[in-house]
Image (cartoon, rainbow, N blue to C red; front, side, top):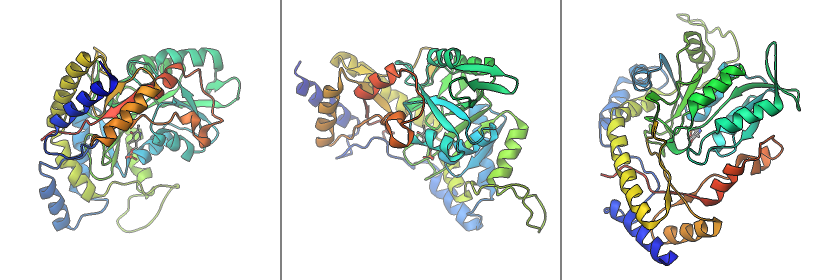
Length: 384
Ligand SMILES: *Cc1c(COP(=O)(O)O)cnc(C)c1O
């Protein structure tokens, strides 16, 4: 089959999935539940800022959904990651292991502390951190000392590891958790994209000490802007609440703060929206998985590679992804689809290729480079 013919069929198939749209976006939010009611209720209550019933309800809902003991609402996912790394004990000049193929927020959050990211390779099938790459990197570069694991070539402490569940596809997080435990490295999961995704029947974000979520406008569940941090560790949860509320010592009227804190609280107004959206999470995911199943069948016929979850995982299919044979084919498809009213996008530039991170240590990144040249995200939003 001619390439253009294949691509024409593809965009027609995608458009038919969203018949009411002239231009099909990548992931548009839908507000079809109690959003209006809850937001108006928050306004009527006058509790629109960072204290309020919806913040508490949101945190409660997040523990129910993820199975974590504690959840703390945070103003956005990036700041939730920053907070997670602080709570993990990461210090200035420490190193943090992450993946080259991720959204910029992961690397930025590490940098806010003054820590240095190390970018490791991902698995070709999960698009997330490769446990094989992690293990190999540590065996070749790290040594255990009394107070933790150190990078032999830089002399710096490897304080944390931040794998990311790309597009909601769970990576091999149990193996990664086991390696981190063996090397005494704190695990913070960037689960920003994987709300409602499970690995071996456990929700993503609960495999390490801390998990982090985002509720940005393009995510599966949105509240305009928002984030959450989950943990089973009571001390961490308490400190998260404390640090995100300017480290204020609770008192009836006095303003005493016992360390340098942050204004990272999620406003009640956003939490109201989040609660209404979370009520629909299962519905959203069922809808998205239905679309993914249709895509899978269609792309099998077209002989185009469509990314699917591992057999032992259940993905939320936040963003569906295609893998083309090479960069040229990818670019032809990107041009064709965007010109014909179907929004498609390549994957992020690899972190180590950005000027801020060009001097960071990496491994071979074989799979990351391979994926970066071939991957395209296609429309994945809820279909009404
Ligand atoms: C969206 C996202 C974040 C950050 O979330 P914001 O709420 O936009 O700050 C972090 N990491 C990854 C991988 C993301 O996709």
